[in-house]
Length: 106
Image (cartoon, rainbow, N blue to C red):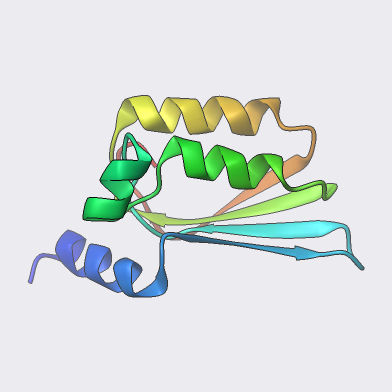
């Protein structure tokens, strides 16, 4: 099996992405362990993380520091640019960790 396909299958089992906040440390973690897709409909049908759902989750975080953990084969460049801009504009300090793969748009 091709490694990229295997990554997609493994990531699909783990879910689209996960957000966890720790109030006692003023930190939050976002796990982006899936491909980046254009719309919520695409994400629901094929899997992946859309900019709409990612940005909504990001904007709900009020922590001083956000750790963004990435293991993604990439995806839509246009969707990734929207996510990137939301990250740049967020008031928190954002630290990115590459846990496995950050390919293409990721």
